[in-house]
Structure formats: C-alpha cells, structure tokens
Image (cartoon, rainbow, N blue to C red; front, side, top):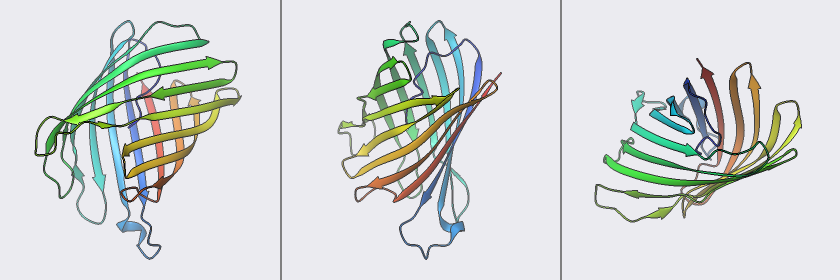
Length: 208
C-alpha cells in the first residue's frame, strides 16, 4: 500500500501489515469478513537504499491463500530532520488474487515529504501498470499523509489512499514506537463502488 516514508538503517527488518475489511452488510458474520496480512522482509543495501520482499496473504471463510509476491527497491535522499526530503519507491509484483487471473504489475511511487516542528506532511503521486494479462493501462495510485506529534514519539494524523477511480480510503492513524519497533494503527473509511466500507490496519516492525 503506502511506501514506508523514512530512510532505513543498514539492518534487517521484518514488518507485518494486517488489514481487516469490514463488509457493509451488518448481517455478515465476523468469521466471513476478510482478513489480509502482508509480511515484509527488508534489508538496507547501502546508504539510503533498501530492498524488500513482500508476501501477501488473504484469510476469510475459505482457506488461507497467498496473493503472489512483490520485490521493492526504495531510495531516500540524504536529508535533515527538518525541512524537505524526497525519494522514490519502485516495485514489481506477481499479483494472484482469489477468483482472478494472475498478472505482473509494476509500480513507481515518488516520495515528497516535509517536516517542520511537530508537523509531518508526505505525498506519494504514484502510478502503476500491469505488464501482463489483457488489461495493461496505466493508472494513478496516489497517497498522502498529514501527521502531528502530540507527545514523545506519538504522531496522530490522516492518511489517504487511492487504488482506482472507484476505490478511495481515508484513515485516522497513530504512529508510535515500542523499543526499536515502529507501530502504525489506523481505522479507515472507504468511498467508491469498489471500496471496502471500513478497514482496520496495523503495521508492526521488528528490527534485528
């Protein structure tokens, strides 16, 4: 989804992203509502460059299924703790969703951020394009975030994601830290005919 917007240290990291898609019909039982998990293994190749391998999974009333795999390369230019910073995230993915044909997809996400005082603003004017299958048109997949540091290492803010013209989501999110691990928790509301009505997300990072 949203590229991690920070310069990574030269160390191995593992992230677990979990999502809960709450379907619109309240009569849907909890065990039939879809869960998803994305396991990310990341390694700092050299200064300001990071490579990661991502393995998405989907859970629901049926069997657990893998949804392909992704490789990602991210660069964050050297910058101060305050002011403007920039970077780029490039991803190639083998997408294998339930009841859909598999296809290869590439995504390029520019990273433009600004920090000043307690404020942090990030924009990701990204785009993606399938490179196999019948549908190969390019589409915009922008994302943005505005956060405010309330106390310590606790930031609260708003995140926006667009997956397609018919799928948008707006989150209220909290970013915090537990030891060496970064945590992000958010509750989102989807809009558009292809969006999930409510989404709960959590990101937990293990640093080794």
